[in-house]
Amino acid sequence: MTTNISFLLNGDKISYEIKDHWTLLHLLREEMGLIGTKEGCGNGECGACTVIVDKLAVNSCLYLAIDVDGASIETIEGLASTNGTLHPLQQSFVDKGGIQCGFCSPGMIMSSKALLDENPRANHEQIKHALAGNICRCTGYVQILESVEAARDKGGQNE
Amino acid sequence: MRLPRFKYLGPETLDQALDLLNTHKDDAKILAGGTDLLVRMKKGLLKPKALISLKALNELSYIKKQDGYIKIGARTPLADIIASDLIQKEARALFQACEKIGAVTIQHYRGTIGGNILQDNRCHHYNQSDFHRSGRQACHKDGGKICYAREEADRCNSTCQSDGATALMALGAGIILAQKGGKRTVDLTDFYTTDGIMPHAMESHELLKEIIIPVQGGQSAYHRLAYRSAIDYPIVCAGVFLKPSQKNEIADARIVVGAMSRSPLFLAQASSSLKGKKLNDTYAFKKAADVSMDSAATFAVHNVGATLEYRCAMVSQMVIQALEQAAAAIKA
View (cartoon, rainbow over the protein chains, first blue to last red):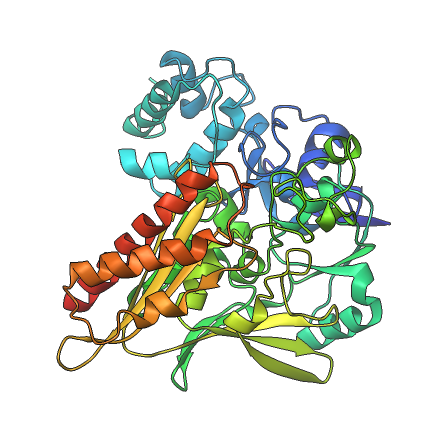
C-alpha cells in the first residue's frame, strides 16, 4: 500500500511515494539518505532519532511517515547554512565538548533547538527538562547542558 | 527496527472510525499517538492487519467541566493535560501522573491519555524482541503455558504500569466506550480485569471515547518511583484522593497502588481505615500505608526491573507521600 505525501523538509517542498508502514525515521534515513538522524533504540526511549515536526521535537522512530503529510520537518541536515557555517547550537556543541562520540548529538541538538525556538531564554532547569528524553551513553551531560546554555547566551548568533 | 506491514486507515469522523472498527474487529488496532502500539508492533507482540488512525478526529481532543464531571477526550495529548489549569487544580493526581509519562518534549506531543490508560500490561520477560522470545517457549501472554516471572504460575502475571490509570482510579474516574450505534459507561475499577492476558474489559469493536472524573470537592495526589526521572515506567506508584468534612476530618479516602499487579489496585481496607481521621493524623497515614503495603505485596511478582522486596517496601513510602501531598493541598 503506497500513498503520496508532500511535506516541507528543511524548507524544501518534497513529494514522496511512501508505504503505510514506514516510519519517518525510515523515510529520512533509508529512503532519502539523510543519515544525520540516528536510530538508537527504535522504541522511543533514547531520543537519538529526534526531529522537529511543526515546531515540536518528536521521536521519528515512532512517527509514521504517512502522518507528516502537509507538515514541516526540520532535521539536523537543515541547521548549517549552505556555505558550511554551523548553526550556533552545533558550533557550541563543538566548542564546549558537548559533541563527544557524536551519536546522540543530532537528537540533543534538535531537542535543544525546539526548546530555544520556543523559549530563547530557557533556564538550566528548562533545558534539563527538554533534554530528558535524550540519552547520552558517553554520559557527558554536563558538557551538553553547557553547550546549550552557551548557544542560548549567544542569542542564536555565532561569534 | 522495522514495522511489519499494515494498512493505514484514516477516518475523518468518529462514526467512520466506529464503522471501520466494526468491519475489521480483531484485525485492526486503533492508532492514537502510537508510542505504545508501534513499539509492540516492532517487537512482533501485535500483528494487526490495519491501523485506524485517530489523527483527523479532533472531536476526541478536549478538556472541559460539565454536569459535575471533568470530561477529557480520549485522544487529548498528554501535553494538553499537563498545561490545563482545570486538571492542575481539580484533578492534581492526573496532572502529576501525566507529567511523568515518557519524556517531556517528545512523547507528550504524541502520547495521548486514552493510549496511556489502554496500554497493554508489561513484563520484562514478555516485552522483548521476536528474536529474544524465539529462543524459549512462549509464555502465557504470548500464547503458551509458562510464566517466567513466577514459577508454576497457571496464569499471566504481567503488570499494569500505566501512570494515568492509577491516578484516574484514585480520582474515581469512569470511561465511555463507544461502538457503532451505542455507547456504555464503565467505572475504571471494573474496566481493569486483573487478567494479565486481557487486562481491559473492552470488546474489539469498541473505542475509548471519553474519560469522566467526578468533581467531588477533595484533593488528589500521585507519587511514583522509577529508575530515571523521565522515560521510565514506574516500578511502584500510588494515587490517592482525600475528601475533607466540615470538621477537617477525612470524609472519604481512596488509595490506589499501581505497577504492582495485573491491574491498578484499589485498596478498600486501607482507604476506609482513614475515614473519620484528622487531616494531620500522621499516625493514621502511616497505618494506612502499611495496610496498603501488605495488601499490594500479595499480588506482586518480580517482573518489572527492581527486586520484589524493594518494590514492596516502597509501596508504603509512595502511599504516605501521596497522602501527605493531598492533605497539604486541602489545608492550602
